[in-house]
View 1 (tube, rainbow over the protein chains, first blue to last red):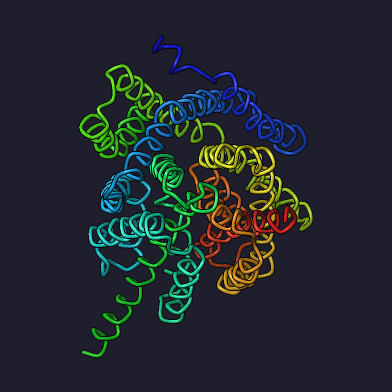
View 2: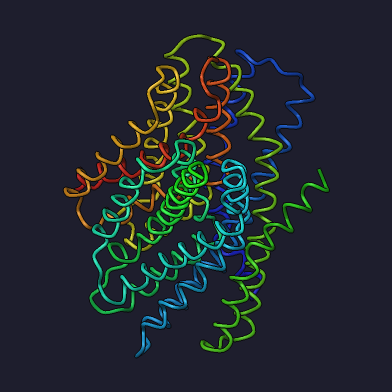
Length: 245
Length: 231
């Protein structure tokens, strides 16, 4: 009974993944035949990698469908139908913080920034600022559901702040900042948090899952941009000060 | 390779463990779910972790070298049209195969009761990324500063946002967020670095960077346009 539950719908997942990967492989083979002409043994290695990717995507998507999405919707629905539904705000903060702090891509970004600033910006500090920033934006996303905060003004103010910071930020950091938008939107956080938000929006009266349930990923993507730009400005001020001495 | 896989697996496990613990505690203490449902969640989580580790290793030994091979071969052709065209196809295929993009499209399909279809959404997001990756290649070739393009892109987003129907607004920004995944990012970077290293003379570092930021503007504009057409 349980085994069937875990595998339900896997045929669709297998088809989706096949559809996603086959064009990529055909594209590469065409390139190989026309231009690259790499040795066959090397191609064989690459194809092993493609098979790994295939198995991985099927397992991952299936796991997300049977575990992360339903559970996220369930918990979101639970908090959303509570009397004190604001509890979902601190819950979102907690999960947002943990998700970011544990994300390998975030750690890579932090050490990258530490290097680019020749140690001025400590990686561990950036980790805290980033995790706190993401947590704050997830909490904001949940507050948006509870208190009906409109989506667009938050985005506009967020990006407006980013643009205001641009002239004061170091050039190298601008590129890193905008590239870092994706580090916190890892597949783990996105699947669960998105389902949480959609689940809550489905049960709160006056909310619509399509218009209100989504938008959280966009919030999460804003946090690292603002955090890196802000630290870059701080770094620049520090540098000017130390040069003046 | 085995060592590599083990490391990736442990890293993924570390990344999910804190959230999974919070979920399990919440499910057991507050929702009091049955042990069968709990077992199903745990099995599903193991599938996620194992699957993601397989996926990351597969990308590393399969798809990424493919991207690098094409990225370094492509600029040698010297044809701007070929570079830009292939960059488009590259961006498109990498994006539709991205797990995050698949999950988001599926979720939107379900939440909208099929009104915003999964397949169409995948296509629009893919075209959005493809278009901006192609633009980014043009930028590297022509030497246009990245800040100009990003500013222009977000300005377009702002203007279009005012005319986007509410059903598509939040979704469009989410679509921009999910494209920066573990497949698209290294794939596009490989292409960008390949092109800027062969074309030479420019700062490789700052040319390669910024590509991802640009790539996430495309889907936002694409989904907004989709909403404008639907309305």
